[in-house]
Image 1 (cartoon, rainbow, N blue to C red):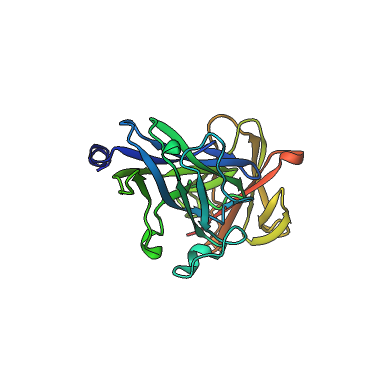
Image 2: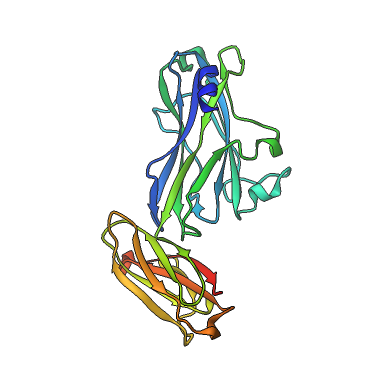
Length: 284
């Protein structure tokens, strides 16, 4: 399908993060780029993309750098507050929770600023990674809410005609994050997999009781009950270039059947310590 689209379209608009792995608390930028191998004369664009407010913060509004193209008139039209008023037609895309939607527009106002180069940047969006909510990647999806707002991504030429365009989304992974896999019956084994940058000391926390204790903006939120009699530190180590994996066996205790086990990682020391997401399973 992608091969067919590439044959039909002469332009490609991509979202590109400055890093595909971002640690909780770190900043990065998402850049919108355009590829124009046939050097068509371009005069403007509009572009919408969805992003995840549960995993990311937009600390300031999108902007254009002096070298960006099609920027005589640049408008960041809609987004969730504080950098926009949200969407009347789709309130869930502008409530600051879950998936959000940003919509931007750039226009060249004179022939001297039209773009006919082979590649260029359209705009940049600053983000800060918050505490991971899952091990799966967080996506930036072009036209995610295009049907709801009745506006799709468009690139136009100097006559104002819309040109065929291929759209390429982006993903980032927020670390530290943790996941669990295995067989969850008493007497069986399971494995916990931690992702983080190399060189961080880590502790894997386990409890039969959940918690929700906000520690601070640096550490994040504690999601396992460390005051429960069931609380254990299942393993420690130092993160490497590959995921850190520990395997354990569920005790053959019938009293555990029906209980839920909760896990979380604390990774880093001092100012670098961060809490991961939590994961869980019901014991069978």
